Image (cartoon, rainbow, N blue to C red; front, side):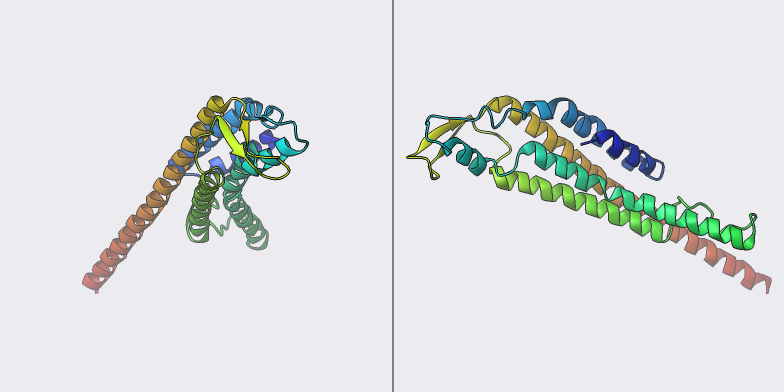
Length: 233
């Protein structure tokens, strides 16, 4: 997969993000995408070839591998990275929609007119779009963490597994290659994912709190303005 292409797309999201969003983007690329591309893919590149079972029964090793690894960690993480980064494009598309409306408005009413004070400012519909993208990203993160734990029953890879699935003649022992190294990478990726969830939750609270404070200040300003007008009259 061309991760540089994904990085180029997400770089446009950075300028519309809050401080928490910029930290989230840094964590995704430095501690997840970079680790995934540079190290994790190589660690799991020989997982099926070095999955050994103490039997020579044709097909037994392949069936046991498929039974214990219905989907590889590396492919599950690739899907996770794609799913958790795609909601950010909702913000970019919404800003592009605003900019297009701004362009048409200026063509119709003149260059000195403005439809939006700042198309990238998180007000109105864009605020809801940004908030929705955070909820979707958080949901995907939690869902993939649950799937990883559910499929493998743990984040720790065992050194030995036992398999009696047909066509294996009996209960056979199978050995996973480099289980300690893979366990370390699994915990690292899970920790990075949890950090991203925490950052998303912090950003949600920040956006809501900032919006509440802004509405209160706006209400106070309107009340003061009404009082001034009433006293003048």
